[in-house]
Amino acid sequence: MVAFCCLAQAKQLAIVADPSNPATNFSAAELVKIFSAHTRTWPDGKPVTVVVRDPSSADIQMVLHKLLNMTADQLQEIIQAHKGSIVVADSDEAVIRFVSGTHGAIGVIDLYSLTKDVKVVKIDGKLPVEQGYILRGN
Amino acid sequence: MIRRTPTLVSVSMMALLLTPVVSIAQQSNAPTAVLPLTTRSAKVRSLMDQVWNLALDQVEQAKAIVVLRQAVNIDPNFAMGHQLLAQTSLDPAEQVREQRKAFATRTHATPAEQLVIEWFQDSADHKLIPAITAMNTVLSQYPQDKWVVFLSNLWLTQQTQYERATVVFEHSGLDSPGLLNNTAYTYAFLRQFDKAFALMDKYVAAMPTDANPQDSYAEILRMAGHFDQAIQRYRAALATDPEFYSSQFGIADTYSLMGDQNRARKEYAIGFHKFPLPELHRIQWQTREAITFIREGNFSAADHAFQAIANHAHSKQMSQVEADTYRQMAMYQRHPKQALAFLAKAEAAMDQGKNTMPAALQQELAQILRARVEADLNLGNKRLAGSALRQLERMSQGSDDKLIDTAYHGAAGAVRFSEHKYADAVSHLEEDPNNPLSLRLLAVAYQRIGDNANAQRTNETLANLNDPSLEQALVVPAFRTCNQDPNCSSGLKNASLKQ
Image (cartoon, rainbow over all chains, first blue to last red; front, side, top):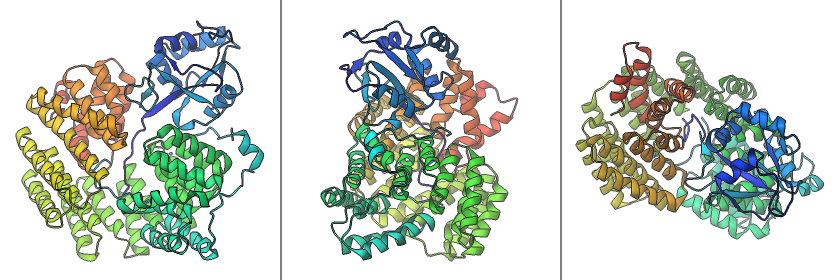
């Protein structure tokens, strides 16, 4: 007997930025432009660097489906076309390490990997724990 | 079995490595650092070794609680003792009381211990993001400390973050029997049974003369659908320790899942006759026994059995148990008006509110409201369903309680589904992924929006669910029958969406 059961976990992904980034909120549309490399600089002129897990990973599948509305192959093409401004990391910890050490970096991680070295930014005014947050799902 | 939490509500931890990312941690703590347990008493330090063995390795939670109470009595300023008691206690009032004491006495502890206490305090205060950050900071400093790994594993499992929980265990390199047991269950929750069985083999080998490894192995075998092997393991547990009553009831539960309800009831009867049971455990297995009647379609016998449980709970002034029993009766009624009558009885019991913590009452109320939404939908009364849903939404927005949140999303998903708003339904139902009632709708909703891969995955999950719960009994056997029958058309499947 177990206290709770048992099939699947609802995931919550967090958009994280380096703590010096003054932004606290992005619209979903702004994030689409950032993650598809249409937005290349922040308002203060610093270059935007996006860091993501492999496009085939489950977490990025959720980003593709719920936010970017594109396929893994399409994201892979964008990554290939914008090497240097979009970086692929092999773990959430690597994403956090890169974002915390790179001015202008922004990434996406599993909320439960979050550390104090990065800051969570809202999407459409909502934090990951709030109802209606876009990057939640099974 | 694994440690339990004191609730009767019937809802029922990868390959990546955690690299310490906090620079302070890298400078000040080697990976083998041990979290200090600050106490002025040598006796208390000795007792904490006992607590570990009892709570984790032997899964003797009641005995571990007694020793923890002894430890905090000897040293009332033992902040981590209070914290561990808060996390181990089976008494909701004691959990709340000890969490407050842990927070009040934290200044007697080291900064790392204080961070652990703040993590759980933030969690109790529904401040999830600070709680996660605190947990990961402690983990980066003490990735191989047994208490930190245990607490992380426990908390992440409570948060249904099974993948992350397995990462914490794998990175720790620890092989404590208790952690092997807990992580095997976590892999089973992820349906990664090969990994679960490998850990169970290690657990059994580490404790060959204990019953619990066999009992846990049995339960995981049952989750995987290996019923005969599960019963063999349960019998091995009883042969090792004839007083290990959960294995007797595990046999009964397994026969029920196999479809042999007569044999299941005989095994329950043996258990009730043979073992003096704690009140809540007796009610839990009496409820399972009542479910056997539902599995064989004998609803009047089910009514009789559930009503006896409700009457007993009423006589013992156990309001939440009484309410939950009436709620379950409502769930299997074939006539929505009858279901609503039982939900009214559940609400009347809730109004009594005797011997129940406020949080448990709120959780139960959410479950009742969810059942009310579904009954109203079955009755075709969308206005009342909407009213109950709005009340549930307000509760969810005001509480951040996982049980209440999932109840809301399950109900909202059912309403959106009934309105043929399938994409909206999916976004809600995905938030309630452990309830067969929601999974059944989710699979169809995926199909309706053209997401056939997720529809297939959800169908497979549902078909392979072997949990002795009422929800499983209501949904899974009929779903399997339809799934295996080529003549069971999508139309029939749609018809089966109504209870």
